[in-house]
Length: 375
Image (cartoon, rainbow, N blue to C red):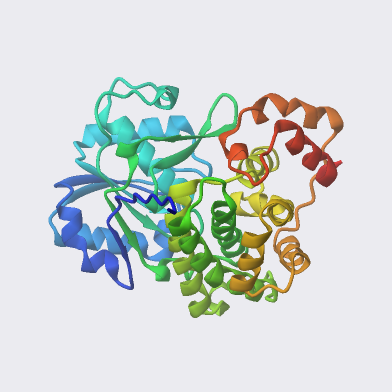
């Protein structure tokens, strides 16, 4: 018989006006909260105003912590956790892109565990469960609102590292595509590529099954046509000139990707993408997209039947067409020297994402790809 597994405990409402329509579900989480955001995105999108209105409707006290940076630091999340405790917050609301949402999940852990040091979160043995966390995305890329993982940057190393435990699953996800309408072109592209990466990597992952692949294919069917449309637009287009139907499709595709991602995780493009984000300040989705052509080539080699089905569903004529579009959307100019590439080896050993990759993947495979792309 076919083996299938599925577990996704996050209550999700993906619809227009959901923040106000389901404000009563925020009240079920507690009577006071800390709102965790970055400095601009939550306000510019209108999401912060809607969340504040929803909290006021329910008589919930709140304070805004708007100091989350891109690729959030462990220290910032730890400090926000302390702020939540001082407020007496009973839950966390995180608003923003993947950085703010990931930070919100970490803040919920720190808020509940006053003695937990910053990097001790990676030990996964905090004694008290994380506070409930409601997530409101303003980008369509990370699917962070549907999983238990937070990717944080270790201050002293400048290295991104993920942490996740079952109590970090959000208690509520409120997804309204209108919050993505103000997103600039390049951010729209990067986040959409990230969502497509989640679909592709989880579809071909060695731990995928019928259910997870169903979500990945449905997400890809929405995301790939959207990416081809974006590839034909000027990078200087104003946010309001990007069709809202396209944005709605990207948001829906991202949500579907989240179901597959939560079941399977990612393969080698994601950890390799971190190297470009950390070392060259390339946005996460675009950095991951740099490695997708090589990943899809490997998928065709080792999983030809699945690959042919993938091409059919997304409507791409060939691997070459997929690769050309991705390279146009992610035009990264990076140069590395041989020693720099070799120095990455310890970090690229025993990476769990590599084990999921079609045909297996090793640190030597990764270094060979870096040499091919960046020498």
